[in-house]
Length: 376
Ligand code: GMT
Image (cartoon, rainbow, N blue to C red; front, side, top):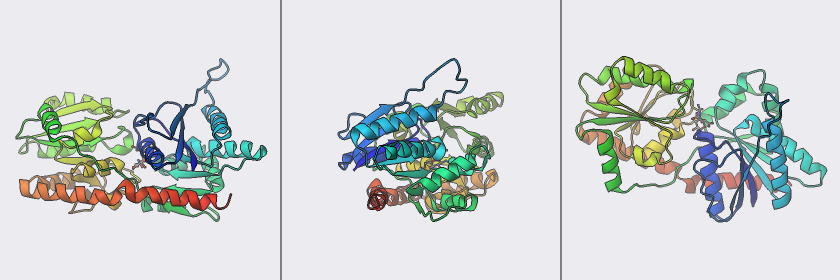
């Protein structure tokens, strides 16, 4: 198949899922054309069957807001025409689904039928989807999609509750991970840079938006710091980071907090940790938690959205009500009470992650592509 894959190139989960999916499809022999305004951070452009097409955003004195969606559409049309694409697969509805609709219509006027599949990732429905200045466009573009997928049963319910879709099925296909193991010596070296041998490491990775409730991480730390020596490692960047850093400095916690910013080698840092924390207000799936589990790290999380579909309470970690930092601290104490308990949870987290291996998930996307293409 020749697939035009549209995504955000950033560290956010939707871009990561699209990138990993596209690379796996290319390795399986499909021809995959990534279309985005920048090369996606995790994209290996040297893989066979894989191409990257950059969307150039045109500046013009009249444009206070350059129309990205139109330049994206034009690029999609160009790539489809030249490479004879079979299908577009767009990740994150806004603005990719409506751009795909317009590209499809342009191509149709030239006698080319290129259907598009929309994958919903979360905030495109649960936050932006609610806003009246997006809702009619998202609803229309979803209706025009040849197929809609989303990343959890929870997001499927949220979408159906917000949008009255006529004759449209939504297929839930979970996020996935690839087996990964960092060299033991590298993990030991990295760990030594982050913490003393007797200290535990609590890690969090995100884009530090409000929905992540990163302030809850400090609250949990404050509840355990008196009797548990630990370092809190924060990976990623976003609007809430400097607010958190400020709070940490004002309270004199700097020596226990490491803000590492955005990293491409997240796996290598994850493997150093003794627990991952994800206190989100909303989370359609929680790819970051799954990536931690894949690195053998148990998860202390909220029960937002699709997280309980990934993090199994009492097995791969613990799930608490959103904002209940007392419960999260209690769970962390339990997890860290002795090495035997921690080792058991680490092994169970790693085992659970294998259920979400890319080998299991990739055929589910291919089946959706096939089901669409039989009707073309
Ligand atoms: O919230 C993020 O970190 C980014 C966001 C995105 O769309 O880029 O992530 C969403 O998609 C991920 C991949 O499907 C999911 O694992 C995340 O749970 C989801 N984030 C939210 O729903 C808040």
